Image 1 (cartoon, rainbow, N blue to C red):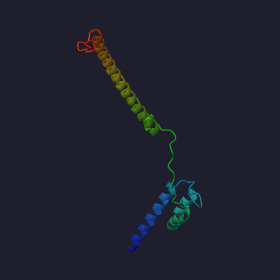
Image 2 (cartoon, rainbow, N blue to C red):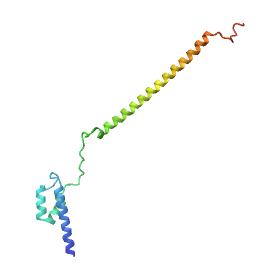
Image 3 (cartoon, helix red, strand yellow):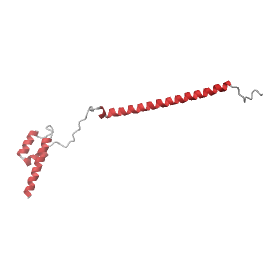
Image 4 (cartoon, rainbow, N blue to C red):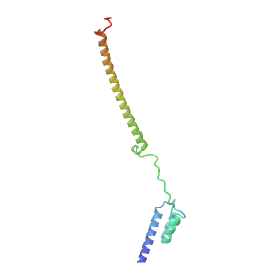
Length: 135
């Protein structure tokens, strides 16, 4: 039973190391080339796996994610979306201000028409309550 467990452990370590060698970029392997590591792994399964983990495997440096310079579509570009939202808000504010200005001008016009109409009527009629003539 112990032999079976030992064989399974060696097989798992060998397969894991071999897959790790195959998936590693050839420019990141240390020591010898990627092809040489695969040959060492096949010829010396357990020793090759141990050597790979100690000497050949690349350091665990986090690889930088590639920076996309240009978005594929305008709706994927955050700057475009931000500018679009800003333009939409500015346009809505301009429309609101134009409406308020038009309402204010209409009220002023109505007030002028109302006040000028009553002033003309008062100028044409004599003041019946004028007390200056009695003096």
